[in-house]
Structure formats: C-alpha cells, structure tokens
Image 1 (spheres, rainbow over the protein chains, first blue to last red):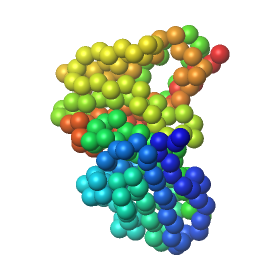
Image 2 (image 1 turned 45 degrees about the vertical axis):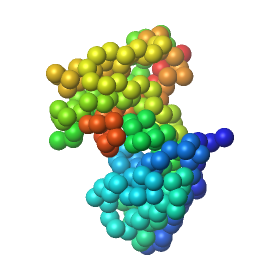
Image 3 (image 1 turned 135 degrees about the vertical axis):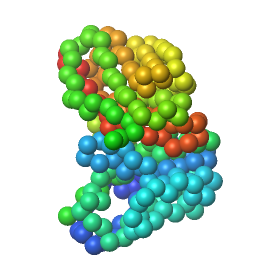
Length: 112
Length: 111
C-alpha cells in the first residue's frame, strides 16, 4: 500500500495551460507539503498544510494554488503554465511537522 | 549565498569504498540535521536524523554533526552498488519548522 501517492506521475503540456496534481497520504499524518525539485535536484518547499490549514506559503507565484479538502489530501493547481514551471513536484507528509518527511514519487511536469 | 551548501558531485567510487558526503551551513540556529537518499525517479527517503552535535550510527551509515564548524557529514562504510543514489542533507531550527535542503550529491558505487 503506497503511503504517499501522487497523480499524475507525468504531465506534458503547452505554455498557458492549467494543470492540477493530486496527492493522498494514508499514514494518518497531520501535515502535508508541496516541494519543487529543479533539474539540479534542488528541493524547495512551496506550501505546507497542517490539518487543512495553510501554515507555510513560500514566495511562489499566485498562479500556484494549493487546496486541502481534508488532512489526507493536498492538491496543487497551476494556472497559466510557464516554461520555468517545468520541474518535479513532490508531495510529502509528516506527523507534527517533524523533519521526518515521507515523500511521494513525484509528478514530472514538462511545459513546452 | 545559499543557507546550505553541498557539493553536487557526481561522486564515483568502487564497491567497498568508504564514502564521505558533506554539507556546510550558515544558519547557526539549525539544530536538527537529516540525510535523505533519493533513488532515480523516486522521492527522497529519510536515512538519518540527528539532533545537535555528535555522531549517530546505523549499520553502515554514520552521521556526524559539528555545530561549531557548521559542518555535517554522512559516512558510508563498505559501499554497495545499491547505495548509488543522490544524497540530500537537510536541516531545521526546530523539530517542527521548515526544512532547508542542500543541493544533493549524486553517488555512484561501481561493482
């Protein structure tokens, strides 16, 4: 049983389109995150939710909008995609916001 | 200047070698230090978790933290081809605060 699952694994789309990535965790954790990993493997936090409440909102363009319908789900919607949005987006969860993060397998976004 | 610096490599070693991976940091408030391992096309997974200065050993892996020098290391003894992955250091000020990751070091262990 996958602990943190994200869909889709791959997205290829044109500039200007809108896309969504979904994430679900079955670990019972109360904190979920979105991270962006660029081509150099640098992992940068984008958002964090604790029990459906947004607690971390890094300097991310407002074209990116997270939504947490419940504490087991965290989705990411991206409007008006740009070339620079191409990256791997990872969902993660933790209990109590500790440093032990459990990551999904990533969603690889390519914007053409 | 990045808060956490890590040599991206790539690092290539023969099987059985001792591997040393390192990170330096500038924020003296960091107290929690982690190493994550990321296999190709997979998400990172936690390998080692340490608090403050000192050593921690788990099997073939040893994590060292030297807060006075703002330097952390991960040693892998008797390295195996299955250790081939990218290793990311990460650190935070408190157990519940955001993690700051290093850039990751790509390691290949050749049979």
